[in-house]
Image (cartoon, rainbow, N blue to C red; front, side, top):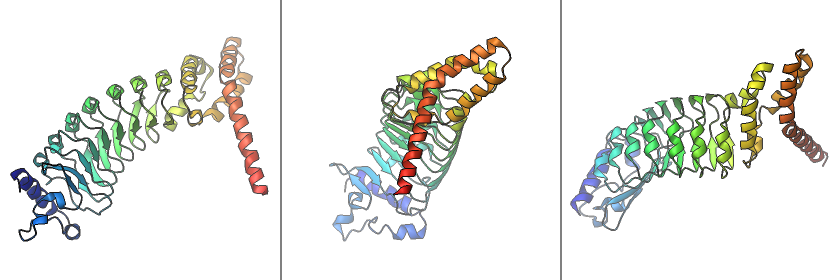
Length: 327
């Protein structure tokens, strides 16, 4: 067995030794037995794949009940590793900064574990990374700005963690990104206008956060977007609080609906419309100043076509439900 392969085998065995006993017993193939030639290389072990030279390039152990940490995993022993999928296990503790040693890594999925602490900024050194999935853990702190260096990223999924701070505007430079899921965190601040540069984006989910401000008009450039879910906090920024605020926001409405008309799932961004339109009509009736009334009427005219569409669709679905119930 080549020295590199021996080093990788020993690194995996050392990592296995740190697992809970039950997990260790589930990996009987992870052993170096001289009387069994087929087991003298990690390439034959469960969840391990190698290239033609016998170097480990893939670790794929999902839904296996792995109970341990990544602290004793020797990242530096796997210079050829391209694919790591350890999703749906019971890994806990921090993601070590030494993960930066995996310079050839293309795919990393540590989703649905119990990992905690902050996302190490050193992940930003993995410039070949195309898939970065850390969904459903207990990660906290801000999203490292260094992730803006991952120009090859196609899919970034950080949903269901405790991440805080703002969405890095540098994400707007990830031109190959098709999926961006940041749902169910504690993210705050404005949605960066630069996300409108993600021309390859097909799915964007920022819901269940504490985002504020409006929908950037630059989203009108996202012509490939098929799935869009925003935070209720953003969607309800359009609610009318006063005649003056409404008129000031008129240009934002224009930009929002210009963007909406270019999206394939317009209904996803109209969650707060039933609150907006009736409130405008109410304030028109109550407004005594002619100038303010004119401003409100202009805003109502802007929203009226979309409101009529909403009413039509609501009535249509109600009729469909009644017909189904009568069958």
